[in-house]
Image 1 (cartoon, rainbow, N blue to C red):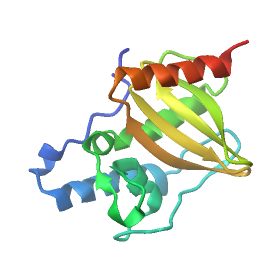
Image 2: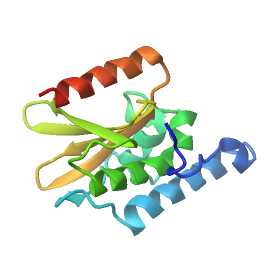
Image 3: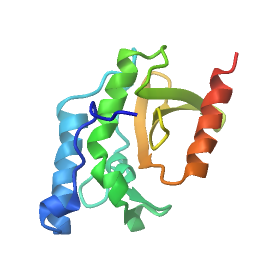
Length: 166
């Protein structure tokens, strides 16, 4: 898979290893991608999960750069951090070809609870995934993460194949 169409990684070392500087750089990228310019998503509004807000930053932002169940105690995940600019890029790619399987972003939907559908957008090698929650008249970018292990990638590939099975 060629990933030349994706933005460059935002590396911690490029902020001289200073976490507050890196966090600010990541947040500025998020603001650029989701506040100053909002992605398109078929005919739905793209919103952000603002609460619980932590350190003046939305829940959506924290879910894109960290892991953990407790919102106040999430742990930064550098693989997520490095790829924060990929989320908007993948959402835009989905909007360009929403009903066509292409060689860059593939997708499927999964039911979450009684009412919600979640879109899973993945790179074609299943190494990175963006989850978008469909709330009816709007969608929420929910989380995004790097998929490190081959067995996890195979699991997601199977879900994708099952969804598109004739």
